[in-house]
Image (tube, rainbow, N blue to C red; front, top):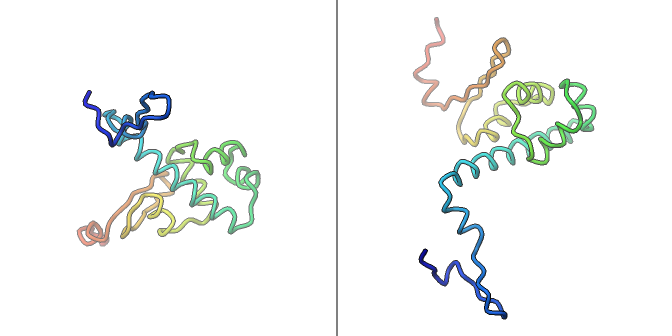
Length: 136
């Protein structure tokens, strides 16, 4: 392993300390984990902001959604990657719109379609919508 001065720092005891982020980026799964962490953070921000705006406690939201306060807390702390059904129920309870869901999906120009009968969430960009035929 080639050591460069960019990723190595010597302390007063002459021990070598390697930058942990530099080392972590070498892992082949780093990008996948980074994307997952970013998604969890976006979900946490949107759920917390919407819940606070509606002046609901975590317990109140949990009762509406049909889950526990611990699950809502984990979601807001970014410790939980909710499945599509949980995210759908939370989004419905918090009156999420396309803006909230676009932020969660990190789409700057998108339209989110929530299919309540199938319990699915689909993301479309404006280019996708041009090619869709709604007159079926």
